[in-house]
Length: 603
Image (cartoon, rainbow, N blue to C red; front, side, top):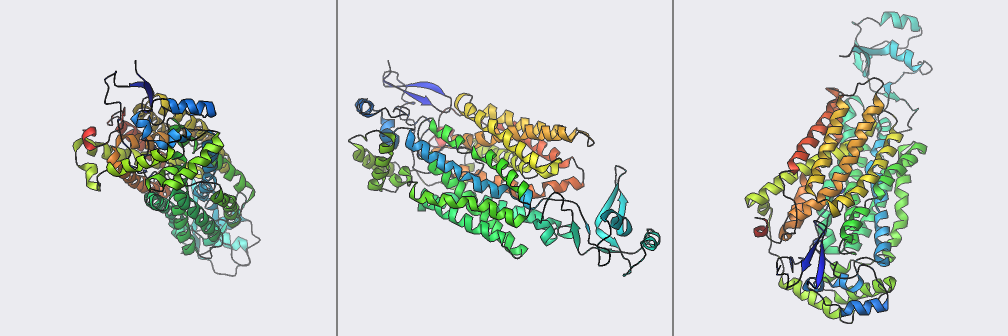
C-alpha cells in the first residue's frame, strides 16, 4: 500500500506516491524555481510557479486545533511536502487565507470601473452641425432639413451627413426662402466646424466636450487605445516590479497612483493630457490586478490555487453591473470619473492589513519576516506552528539556491519543434480570446439596444462562466473545454450576422451574450493551460510572451467597429472568424497531465 496520496490538479485524479508503488516519476516530480509568472488581465487564474498543482495536498487544508496539529506533525512527510514549508506550516487554506484573498479580490472593483468607463464616458450619440446665432430656437429636425446634406445609402435609406453643411449666407430671416433656395444639389457646401449633441441619454462626454466627431472621430478610438496600450505594457512590466519590490509594495503603490491618476483625468483640461493620463492609468490598473492576484495565489496551496485564483475574478461581473448603475445616475463624464475613482481610497487601509507574501519573503532569504507572517497566520487559523518551522524555512532557501534554474531567453521559446509549436499556437489563442472578450465588452453600445441594460446582462452572464470554469479546471482538463468555449463564442458572434437588422435587435444581443458567456470561460481556462504547457525554466517567459499578441488584440479593439462602415455585420463576423480559428488551433496543443521542468521533458 502507498503511504500518501497527492491530488494531481491537472487531471483531478488521485496518484499513488510511495516507493512500494515504484512510480518514481510521480514522487518529487518537480522543484519550484521561486518565480512567479506574469499574468494578463483577465488573466484568469493562472497557477504560480512557486508551487506545483499537486502541492500541499499531503497536509490538512483546514486547521483542526492543537490536537490535530500534533497529529499532523507526527505524520510522515514526503519530500515534496517539505519543499513547501508555507503550506506545511499553516495549511493550504484557512480563515487567514480566506479573509486576505477576499479583501484582495475587492481591488478589482475600481480597476474594472476604469477599464469599462469609456463605454459611458465616450458613448456615441446623435449630433448635428451647430445652429448659428439666430437659429438657436429652430427645431433640430427643421434645421437639419434646411442646412443638412443628405444621401441615399445602399439599403435605400436617406442618411444625414453631420460633417457637412450648406454654405448659406447669413443672417437669414425667412426660413421659407432658405428651404426653397438651398434645396438644390448644386448649392455649395462647407465643412462643419462646431456641433450640437443629443443630451437625452447622456450628459457631457469626452466626445461632446472635445468634438471627437467627423475628422476627429479616430481620436475617440485613440483615447481608448491609450488605456489598453498601458494595460499591455503594464502586463509585461508588473511582474518585474513585483518580483523586485515585493507584492504588497507593488500593489499599494499602484493603488495610490491609480487614485491620483483617476482624479487627474477628471480634471484634465486638454485632450492630450487626458490621453497621457489614460495610458498611465492603464499601466497601474493592470499592476494592481496582477500584484493582487499573485499575492492571492501565494497565500494558498493545493487545489485552492485554482479555486482562489478563479474566485479572485468574481468581482469583475459585479463591477460591470455597478458601474452601469452609477453611470445611469451620473451623466457627466467628469463627475462619473470621480465617482468611480473615490471607491479605491478605502483600500489604502490594506497597507496595515495585508502581509507581504511569505513565499516572496522566503525567496528573498528573509526568514525572520517569513516566520512572523506565518505566526500571524497560525494565530488566525487557530493552529500551532510546527516546532521545526525555522529549520524548514532555512532548508527551503538552501534548496532553492542549489537548484536555481538556468537562464533562458526569448529564442528558447522557438528552439525545439514542440516548444515552437506550443508557443506559436498559444499566440493565436491569446490573440483570439482577447479580441473577442474585449471586442464584445467594450463595444456593447454598438450592438444596439439600451447600453445600461446590455452592460448589466454582460456582467450577469459572466458569473456562471467563471463558476463553471472551476469545474473545468478541476475535473475536465484544459484542452477540450478551452477549444469548445472559444469555438462557441465564435459561432455565437457569427450567428449575429444572420439576424435581420429590423425588429430583431434582441436576438443579436442574445447571441452576443452567449458569446460573452463562452469567451469569459475561455478567459479563465486559457492562462492556467498556458502556465502548464511551458516548462518550469521558461514558464515566466512563456506566459509573458503570450501577452504580446494579447496586447496587440487590445490595441485593435477600439478600431474594430470602424469596419461597420463597410458593413454593419462586419465587426461581429471578424470576431466570429477569429473564434473559430482560435478554438480550432487549441486542438494542435497537447493535454497537460504533469508539469514539465525542462525542454527535454516537453520533447
